[in-house]
Image 1 (cartoon, rainbow over the protein chains, first blue to last red):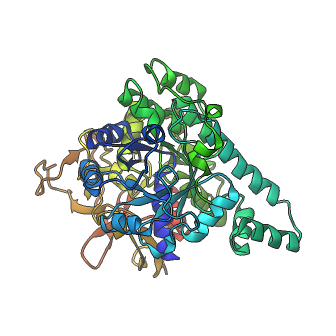
Image 2: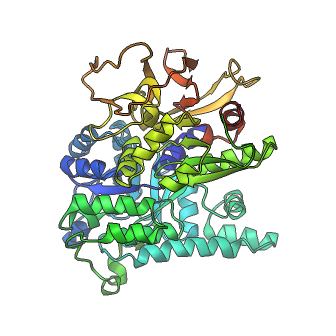
Length: 292
Length: 235
């Protein structure tokens, strides 16, 4: 338990902040200078992975190490779903947080990593309450709603965070013991975990929004919907002026409830990410469908 | 110290980090004390800061908090606030922000200079070296012999700068940041707790309190209660 508190505690320190995908030490420095609360080190941004059609794996530790050396904020890195050894490698590297991510090609089609076995904390993606609770039950110390990575379309992120909220509200009305037991069974989680969430009215760990964030207003929208912070993937470094946009997204995440400030942060940012509308992507090409 | 007899407001700096946890703990602690009414509010703007009789600076990423404070126009107000001698408590990143000097900081990171201490950022190393330990605080909080403390990528107080004229040279190759606040805390600096390895993790200087660890992450509000009694309500 105390070990879990330390894992979940780092996520609590990231709240109200922005975690940015970076592929080089230079980008990591730009993110840190913009006020990012952490960076996610990876070889390719999701938009490129999406376009490549190749198998995407954990990044070369050499590249991750160069980013760990370049900045003093926490560094996260991704492993494939179910790839326990990639996670062991990153733990040996002393990474601060591991993202077991659907953006990479899954290594195990049935099981996710047994995350409680690790000392390093994990963040995992989720589209709904059941998925979030299954990951927490496996030991995830932080959740990010999946959205649809690499699109610049925020609608899936909105959908996933709204869904988790709506499910918690709906299930909280259930008082019948049998019904609650059936629900826990359907969600494939222990009843005690379900009870804890329904009693608190929120997930027991920090929940960031991710997938398709491309503007300061996108970040503020997700914060208004009740998430604890923001992951920005492809949006920043595919824009014309990454330093300017990264700074504006950080500012808007702090002052998400102040339209005059968000107006200021949204103004004159140059050309933004191209964007792929979610409806143009077939079901089988959606990264958020990975994970179970 | 507090001019108004009732309706005290404690602010929690809410730019980034674990501010909600402090707000919860302060609210619970204030309710249990049943003294005069105490409001606890998040602080993001100068008017909000001006309304506060005391301020808590939470944990988070110290570079993020400092950069956001600077570019949203709050930094100068925070420096003035610290100089006003009102109570301020910094935890973890808040301790870094409150210090006069920071080792292993970032060149563009501004600090408030409210306490005559040098703080070493990420002194224990990366997340894998984060830990939890019960500590004996009974020398300054009555009967608290086993307070659960959580250290997350924590800083420590690496040097007491009292009497030493702000030395700019650093013994390591790491960047040392020096506050450009002209305020001078005239109260004596008091070490409240030192770990067995000699690391200083809690200090007090007049109306200012700094801790490396996170009392807001555990379900124990005794530390917050003590802060309210000892710093906020003290006449």
